[in-house]
Length: 68
Image 1 (cartoon, rainbow, N blue to C red):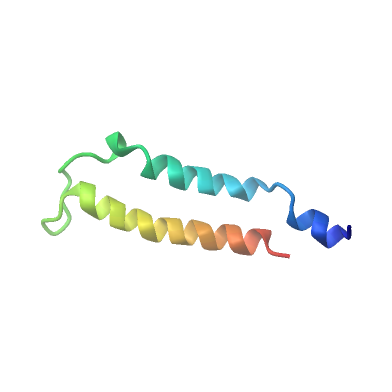
Image 2 (tube, rainbow, N blue to C red):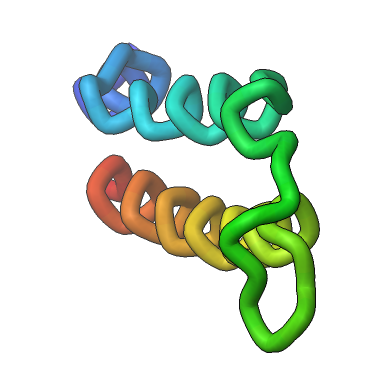
């Protein structure tokens, strides 16, 4: 096995960003409320849409930080 193959299959601390993504998405009591509203949209909805974009940024950061 070459060193590139060993490095690719290893652990990185960057992967903890994925844990943050899933923890926030799977804990609805954190964002299950109406206030504050954003242009009339309750917090429950706009937070989830915002979190989709934040998760995409987290995924890109992990991708580029762990790429060879």
